[in-house]
Length: 294
Image 1 (cartoon, helix red, strand yellow):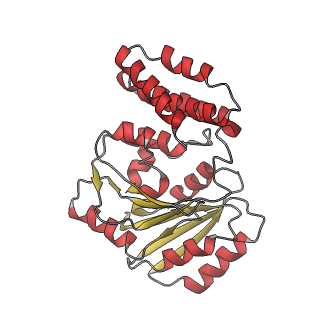
Image 2 (cartoon, rainbow, N blue to C red):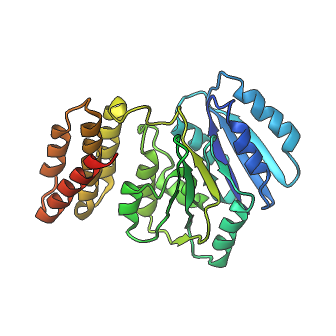
């Protein structure tokens, strides 16, 4: 029988320079009992030594720390290895270069405990850009599919869910190397979960870094991004597939701004795949607006 508690699953790959900030923020959590599963994904920079040292120094009967080694590369593989080892009712995925405020887990669990019908709890996060600019990224319980795909509300650090829900949805998709959080979010929403919002100031700090997944340009990972949108579109019901078209229009706008890849073929694809006139107008407006953003 699963404990009525929460497990934090953190995949780690070559994060020796930043992972201690994440580990310290987890150790500072006021919620107990707490279990943390660290999944090393083949680090070669001493990260695994840092994880083992932290475990030896921080573990207590109320803070259980497990380290798993997953040699097959990929964040999805690492997260799935961690998910397979979870025994608690709730699972929180987290990234190895971000941080959580001390009451983050306890406040999330309070929302979950306040309504036993809730399956997902989402929250706002504070995003720290490389340029020093900070902005709040909001979670919304409205228009869940749209916000999942366009605004990334199901990004890893912005919610937690019942462990059984993650497993029924099939876990993370290793075939997708980018925007896999949105793809998983769609499959979670297919289960018709009850979604709640934790109000209040952000309790998670998300830090942009030079090693961010998207790399220096959108064009650099065009093939992976377009494949991810194809997978997202495949999961959507027919009347909602225009949202995938909007994602293509936004990506085409990035291509235009970068000036490396011709945006016309992708935009044309999006328009041809969108049968309703009002949705095609929306796609064109989305493309024009995003083309002008700096």
